[in-house]
Length: 439
Image (cartoon, rainbow, N blue to C red):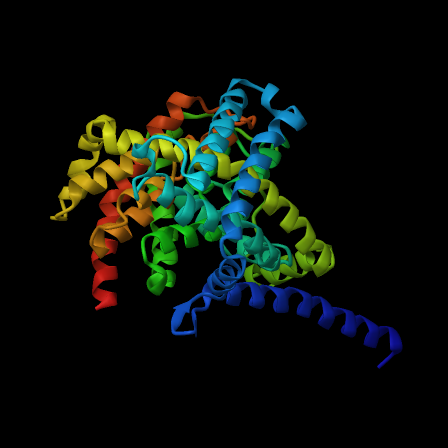
């Protein structure tokens, strides 16, 4: 065997290891429950819990600093000038700073300091998000940056077109959203759409059907609803129901009628070459990947920017949503439209779940916040619906509106309504399954 052949084989093995080792480590960190200190949960959750314990009372000041940074960021970068949506959300982020200051200092109306208002929102949600998004970003690079996404994308090509009316490459967008974030998924979708490789219809399907919150945010929902003991069931049921609902919505107005022309349609993978093509796509992705330290640094930076961008909105929009939910009949009225979809399964808390699902239009965490004291089936269903609804005004809808994808607010709200109704039909039986699994 010649030296050049040996060098080639050695390079091939190193490339395979670059694909396999980070990907397996990422899968372990995000999806393998282990027991430490009497608590069984995924390693990422253990790390965040340990960090929060280490910070102690400093965690609140850390979260406040992140919120202030998030409010200042659009002013410094000029992002607030881009459009009316950015201007409105900049104002909401400034309001988020005021809400966070009240939460930390105890100042303000007594109504806001009830246990299920500012204290719950700040201590249980904002601090957790502020820690888990940057920490999760460290390990996220292992999951999305070293070829696993490309490998999965090729394997899923035969499913994408018949089920979701999108090209095989859209599997990468879907995976990017679930293990990365909707912002990453939408960034990919917008780039591919503007390059003429997606039609308007395909881009709209991906934006409204796949670009949901990430696994790291799902951990926050699961922790809020005390579902971490059922994490894997919760994650996979949320993924299954999200994609099942998307398969239905693509066949209904308004998505069904959108323009479906693309300049550069995707070529098909040769018959009988699926596995080898997927493997080579994974290797190519690993080959193009930066060194691990550089990938981690990039993801941490993006994770910090994402955290400071979303934390002020969670404080302001979340607080407004809680006030509307607890002190006005608005979500009761909207919830009446969803009530039949939850009540058909005989769920005792069907009205509460319908109301919570309606509140998700304002902020995806609200269903979890409103159902935190419910029985397991309703809690599980609320957790699933908060993810499978995909669309909410505190973050994902403004992100969609900032892309070139031709979706109006009216169309987005119609898709949201359809998604929530279908999600409730599927999530309540999933909640009963979770109760059965939990014993």
